[in-house]
Amino acid sequence: MAFIRLSRVKFLGGAALLYVLGTTIAWWEGWATTDLGPFLLGLVVMWGVQLMTHYLNEYFDFETDRITQNRTPFSGGSGVLPQGLLGRRVALLAASLSILGGVTAVLGLVIVGRAGISAVALFAVAALIGWGYSCPPLRLSARGWGELATTLTVSFLVPIWGYHLQSGAVSPILILAALPLAALQMAMLLRIHMPDYEPDRATGKQTLVVRLGIQGAGRLHNFFLILAYLLALLAYFFGLPAMVVILFYLTFPLAAYNWVKIHPPFQEKDLYRLPFWGVALFASAAASELLGFILDKAT
Image (cartoon, rainbow, N blue to C red; front, side, top):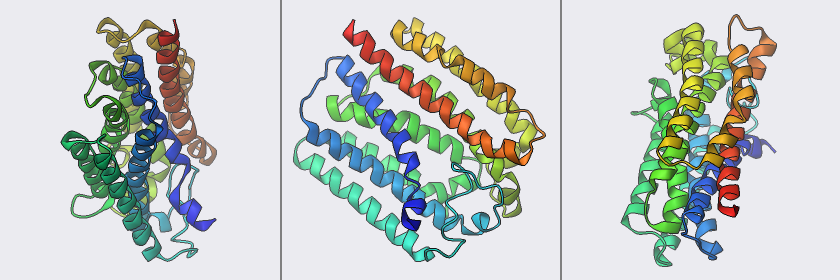
């Protein structure tokens, strides 16, 4: 159970949702395939990189997590290593095995002819970002670049990976669909990092929230909320299906709630709830786009 907590498996579903979105857009555009093997291997690749990132983050954020008081289901780390439930070397070993699993799955895709140079390059970029998120010398999460790196990976590279395995290409429609989701993910990450403000600052971890302060991070959060819905509307005029945009806009009341609930000062109970509503909005928006493409294809 401690190892499951360390793995933070709840986050695997979010990345899988974006992977399925990319695959669905390929199907929507006519790149249909009945071969389940490459789809599942691609999922293993994605999860291998993601789990590696989780384990390395747990290892290198040990000191920050050790003094974290306001741990939530989506922030503050798992708490497994500071509590002594597992040794730190377990996290390093798990990270190594995870990326080894990802590399093995990539080789499988190459062998069956579903991954060429471009697919391998996509994997390499995602793995580099995942490694550099927590590991020195890059340590992107401690330099104010972690939020952008995560958004680039999850909102863009993951759906591109799913699409590319089906088509061997990259779609402009996929990029249009990813843009508003990327804005919502940036807002979500700011909410996730707000409960960690004090321990991050105390240990010199310069997340965007630490750099901007709670007030500044709240303003940037609201900017990304506005940007997301403007980008969705703009994407419609560049070819994103109306059904996708309409369903995306059905999440607007939840975005409005996020806007209202972002204003400090926060009580402890408010800090606990902040990440959840950001995750709920991002997941709802991604699921809405996915459903939009399915319904548009059906009609």
